[in-house]
Length: 72
Image (cartoon, rainbow, N blue to C red; front, side):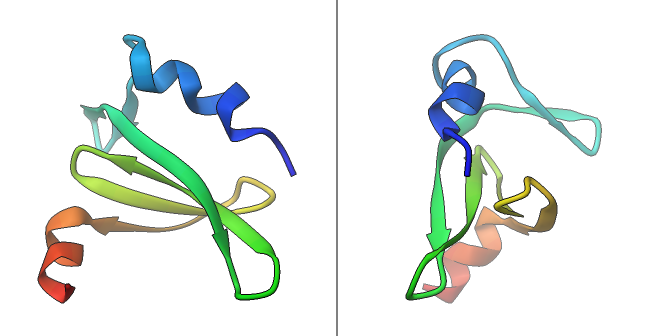
């Protein structure tokens, strides 16, 4: 498992952006995900999306935040 702060902290307070479908997105937060027993991956939250990855850094899925808001 790697340190998320080392990889993504500069995205929070710097000028770095993620490019998603040609649009630059600012990272607003990140954290680990779990399966109820152990850490299973991590997520990145941008201005418009939440991206999920496994512990190997392999992209799993992307969800639009507006879709997540409707579920709540």
